[in-house]
Image (tube, rainbow, N blue to C red):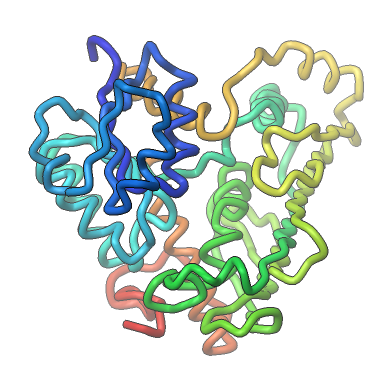
Length: 356
């Protein structure tokens, strides 16, 4: 498209981080509006950026012909309604995680996006950074071999002050606990690297905080390609740590411990089998610099809008993440091994929240 994509951000919470990322790409995006019912909060986020207006009414954004893309940064239970309305108004839609709160709503939203001819893009910014670009280059060069095993740790510290926000820690407001709100990005990254999940089993518990939803979980995955993976989750760690390890036939990739941006941390890539460390190091040296985090996410979206897609997050990626959430909660509640994919008529297709 000609000229920067004109953006309205809905919600000044995590929307502040989205705004900073858009402004790292001034030739590709122009944020025109920050919409929030809390005008003072939105004004504080904007500061002295006089080119951005504060708008407290969502429908005013939908009726604005000068907005091309609506970026939804609201609590999860509002995502479906606002995304559907934005697509119906002829806008592209970016929506924070979780995309919606059931597979039924995901399928309805994907149909609406397809019918509208507009882009629907769930937010998974963990995919973007130098470490993931390096691992992708090693995979593309054939240096990894087949995947064997992966381990994912989402060990964060969340206490009573975090849950002072009324909608957090509740089934109605947050729609889930640590599985949904904290580990969903890491599980997306697992599937981005190892491929789709074929079956899983899981345990979850509320052990750390006085909340409705889970704050600890242990999950086992079998991927479609036969690889195995485990995910350990807690909100009761001393500090925030995200750690990932991917063991391939000819290489092991291990992250640092950065909690919010693992792909921006320094990873180690160690050769084994048929791959030599010299081959690994030469491949890594050839990887170009890349945008990270939200900036990388929006750069990939801009490429798609310009007709050069391939790195963007798709609606199907968003559905896959919700499919995992649904399967995990079903496994927890029924002590079951759950087979994927999940279609209409399968358990929890209409939603996993206990408030439904």
